[in-house]
View 1 (cartoon, helix red, strand yellow):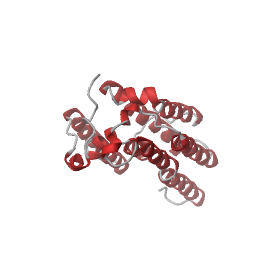
View 2 (cartoon, one colour):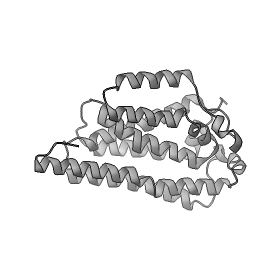
View 3 (spheres, one colour):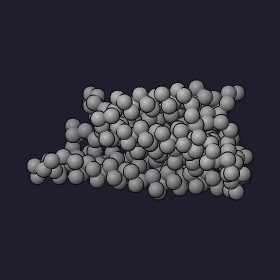
View 4 (tube, helix red, strand yellow):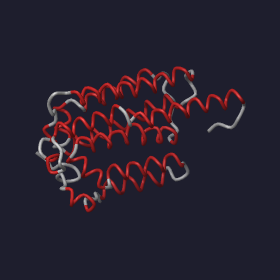
Amino acid sequence: MERIYCGPAPLPQELWSSWNFDPVVLVCLAGMTYLLRKHAAGLGAVAILFVAFVSPLCALSSALFSARVVHHVLLIAVAAPLFALSIETRKPATIARPFVVSTVILWGWHLPAAYDLALSNVAVYWLMQVSLLISATWFWRAVLSAEAAVVERIAFIVAAFAQMGMLGAILTFAPTALYAAHALAPLDWGITPLRDQQLGGLIMWVPSGLPYAIAAGVVARRHWHQLTGGAPC
């Protein structure tokens, strides 16, 4: 078994000294910063990745499932739409395909066997992170483009939050803790593994809706500006 990325689960008193200064990650973030230096949204996305992979949140997500949920929400609902706004690529023909792919990837990585493997093997860990980020960026690229009708785009934003909320509800109401990777560490933080999992499910279910609501507002506002002849947001 390989080491857990970001190191072993920290104790509460160790958290604020648990920064990840992996040179590969730092070089990648520096490269992204250079490439996206002219795009405010892109720089915002890089800042979110810094929080996710360099700050103590990375180490905390080794300890708590609820912190891992925050980590994943930052990737797929904050960094991904910011990347979608800043990266010039060919727009997907439909929203349905990236929606289905990103949904399958999100749910697949939250199957206990896949999740536990990702937290015990560095290569699989990065496969998880990269696949979540790329599939979500593909989805947001389709949603934030002007190709589809505004009603369709907002409907898919609602559907994306709904499927995440459904996954969160399943995790919240599961009768037992599902993830061996978090079988012990939550106890050091004063909560049981089941309560940690329930908290993670609630985060998926409720507050993670905020970035989706903001995205729907951006789409609606852009459409309004197009109708009224105003400058796009």
